[in-house]
Structures are given as structure tokens and as C-alpha cells.
Length: 113
Image (tube, rainbow, N blue to C red; front, side):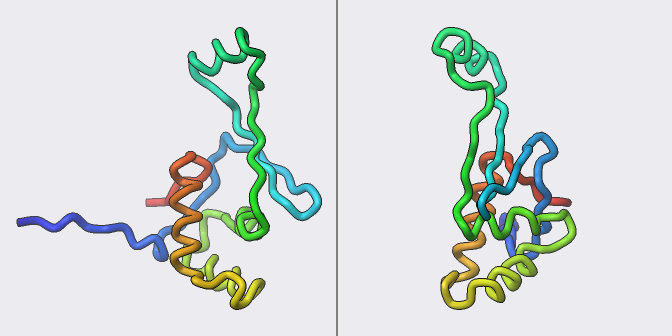
């Protein structure tokens, strides 16, 4: 019987997806995501949907985003966030793991092998 090996998110090294552009505005990070694919093209033409979607990060995500450099682990990023925000970010590890699960699910980041 084989056991499926689970990911330990704290040991993973995130890197931002190259196709995601971003800017910092008034202390907040705004990601610009291109809406690609056939259904998005149709919606853009027929329903005047935008070609790009802006994703506004909260203050914790805005703090983390510029620090994602493809070298720091999630654990190291968590420690930096703890130093910056103190007990305000507790429970730290479940919160930061959820953040990375969400941004990975939207393909804003990927984890290095």
C-alpha cells in the first residue's frame, strides 16, 4: 500500500508567473491578468468584456507579492511577514499556506521543483 506524499507548503519556493504584470499603487499591489481563450475572446467582442482584469491584493498579499523572488521559501516569507505585522497575522502558517494555495490556483505563481 503506497502513501501519497503530501506537499509541505512551508518548504516550497514560489516564483511569480511571467505572464502576470503588476504595479504598486498607494501601498497596494494590483495584478493585471489577461483574459485569454476562445470564450474570453467571444465575451470581449459580444459583451464588451475587458481584455485585462485587475486583481487588487489586500495589505498582507501586497506585502508578500514583491518578496516572491524564486529563492525564498514560504517559511522564509512567513517569517518576514511575522516581523512586519507581528501577532496581527496569526494564525500565521495556515493563513500563509491558504494565500499560496489561492494564488497558485489562479496561476499567479508556480512552485519551483
